[in-house]
Image 1 (cartoon, rainbow, N blue to C red):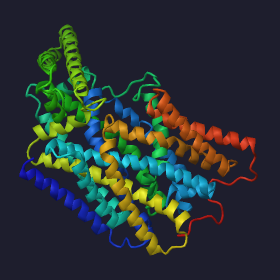
Image 2 (tube, one colour):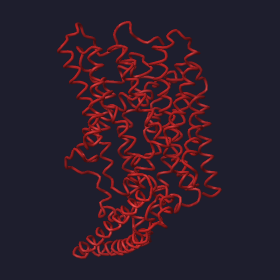
Image 3 (cartoon, rainbow, N blue to C red):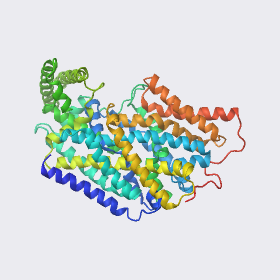
Image 4 (tube, rainbow, N blue to C red):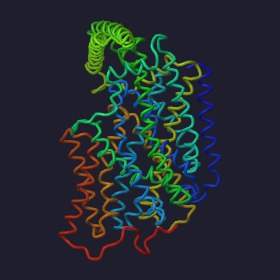
Length: 573
């Protein structure tokens, strides 16, 4: 990067952090530190919810996912609007009325302490792992740009996030998220416009869309049903609905956002805004990846986008034939793409069919050469299951975007990481202090004591995330990995809340056994089958409910409780 890029990057990050800390003044009680005193407007919560979910992984890996596999990933979000409507109608009013700090407090009010504790531990396990992945993403940025070791960059980013999260609490996190989303939207628009401008003069935007479609990069909807396919309309609508019900209804990192709302109506508005905006936003990000693919039809991309691994294998036996095969495939693909555009303009259907066949054949040959290069990385001592998907967008940005724009896009990556990781760390600290420390270890402490404990817990989880970041980042495409990690745990949490809201006869022991059985079922499915991770949430939730109902039927438990809090069980505020 050049001096202007560094200036844009540093100015953006300092402004975001400073604004968040400025707006967090007065966070000197537990209620203000963890819930912002329930003063947040709907638009701030809405952007914070979106920012917490839209981490740097979204921009680094989703664009790469579209480049190699098309836009099928957007189907993953088809269940989100359904989930948001259900949560707005059912969950938000209950959480607000019961005045809880965390979602898991409600489980004690509805069931018992052991059910709350088990759910809290499950949340801490999955969100702690996800936080490591979230912080790992910007390490890829600096490793590509500067060649710094990824461990160094994860430590630097972790230190920045920990500092303002410890000092400012949820208000600093939320108001920083608002600024970060503004930077993110601006950066995405600039990246897409720049990509289109860099296309050859003979290739219009319409031509680019046509070429992307002919290469299978605009395949947004696939209707076939397949248990083993991650991205089709059925896994998105069914598995995705269960995942997002779990994520936004049971995951404290999201629940805590709308618990800061001034009213039930404000919290509902924040969720419904995301229901309307998330799919178009994700579609837009995937479309950027498709346009990067079209750009590289005419400008030869590297054999592998992970430049360090590419440099390492260039001198190995077997690389030269791969490079020659790749070079020939690229030239054939470029010629076929240009000929296809000409045939499309001329309206010559017969020529278009021939050129389409040549175009796709050349693409398959190029993909095969890239796959062989990836296998060479593994054979020569690289990571097993090597993929360069996470490096594609960043390679394009750093090589071809104008000075200043590079800094802005990198600021987008960093802003997204800061918003997502700060939200995760803050929620981890909240559950640690409220659900475990205050409940089981120090029940009679002062408000100031719990405020200090919250800051220490924030520091602990920040360090924890940094420690796991490097190891966790080694597994597959980051956008898949982060959601797969969540799906290993979300189904059992969702089952607990389905029992709480929908089955009044179920008591604490039955719920506890059901959660344990659901988690065991998810882990067994993950280990012993190839079923797509999107179905883990459905499987886990179903096992929790069926098991709890079976235990209840076998040992009737007396009177039941309504789906709101039991009298006298509200947490002291």
